[in-house]
Length: 234
Image (tube, rainbow, N blue to C red):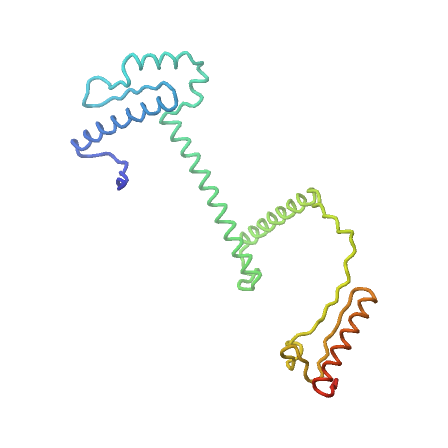
């Protein structure tokens, strides 16, 4: 079962605070050991405690001195390149939060302008009754959308046209299509015509196909005459 998330706040109880400090120091040492083993780096930790007269050094005093000496050999500009203290960390967090607030303000403004413009188009709101500030915002919003559309059109024009596959040069064979169904004539059932229904024949082919179709049509008429005795076209 996962542990409950601990609230990051000062622990007022002395014994609970001392116990938590010991557990978290041991956890930090374990994480540092894993980091050095997995990533093949050298690290050290110096932890002060109000209950101890000397700081807790990890992995040892010699190990801490070795890491500190290697750090001092690095040029000063490289040392402070990615260094954070409490002041710089707070400033970076403030800057990031301000950027997020600006983004949310912009998104809310665009959403509000979109709703107002939709209400004006649907005549739910009369544009003449809007204050001058809202009118200016609507004009600004419309100009932005027009600029975005123009940029999209220009980008589409700059793209090369898609290649059209060549058509098949072989001629199509003549085909005979018989049009007509039960939907065309309710009296048509089971392939038999009623009430003078005559199927429509379309032939995009040559005259030879027309002759073949005529022969089929004549045979079909003869069969109908033999079956019903007489045939009327209505």
